View 1 (cartoon, protein in one colour):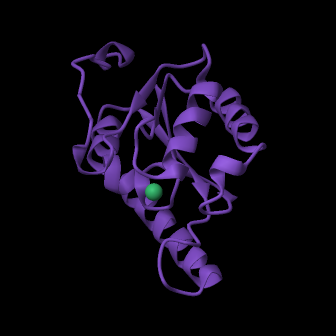
View 2 (view 1 turned 180 degrees about the horizontal axis):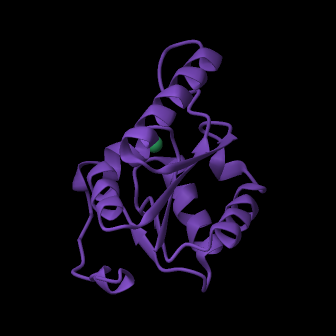
Length: 154
Ligand SMILES: [Zn+2]
């Protein structure tokens, strides 16, 4: 069982679904976190230093979660304008062959997150089902009861 998360920024996987990642790992799934941007615009610090700090934090978080980490380093805040992004995601999904993709929801508040959502759908195509994470503060999020337990050999 291979689960791949596609998240826009370095801390998104931990904030949105760190608990789920831990649960999936405990069930024996391999988890890969793909971080789309460098996170350079996520604060009021020197962008280059902030990107370096957030990369280190993402590596530490992935280690705690026992997940693989791939940092794609697209410019933070510019995913919606990237023509290369969906193609790169597709290449990663073809290479990883996940049984399940997890990504930001199409109605998320952040433009980078929505770009990830659109890119994940293109990359998934017929290769893997896509599970959306809850947008911040649960706004306009209606959880389904769809079980993914059939994806695990329990
Ligand atoms: Zn984010």
